[in-house]
Image (cartoon, rainbow, N blue to C red):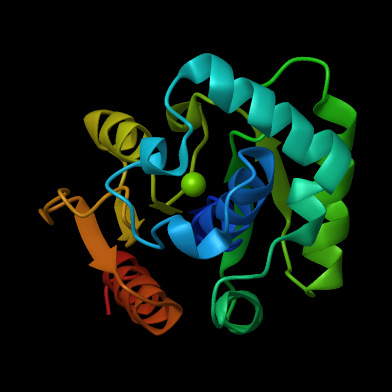
Amino acid sequence: MGNFVLGVDLDGVVADYYSRLREIAAEWFDCPLNELPVDPKDISEWGIDSQEEYERIHYFAVTERKLFATMQPIDSAPRTLRMLSNDGVRIRIVTHRIMTRRIHEPSIVQTVKWLDNYGIPYWDICFLGEKSAVDADCFVDDTPEQINRLVENGKRVIVYTNFTNTQIEEDDLIHRADDWKRVKELVEQLKDQDSGE
Ligand SMILES: [Mg+2]
């Protein structure tokens, strides 16, 4: 039997995307950071209230503020991924980061540099939106649309909790983790289950 493959999303799971986006939104809309709620209902509460505005701020964030190179990691994510990798879990990064035209190069370069900078191990890296096209024994993701599509395709998903996904309920294919300690426990359980232990 091959290695257990863990499909790992980056933004909102390994990289603290929303904290960095909030900082950049404060600059973009010229308002004090503390006026933007830390746990909004959605990002319209930061002034990003249309797809067009999101695309404009995203383009600025990647090209002028090196968004993907300047995020902090989520607590314990790099260390936990190193531990899982040492235990024989094959880390497969699966990210939708090149969704915006014209900024593929900075998006990809910033991403791989950031992963190296935090010592995050991975065997494979997939930049794509249709995540269910990727094979993995389990995925970790935070975005409801992605999670739903993965589950519709019979994939197991660990939902990494943040303000975007609190409505998602656990079931046979869906588990929830509020931190990386829980991700590790769940991955170990699933791995043991699959190997018949
Ligand atoms: Mg994400």
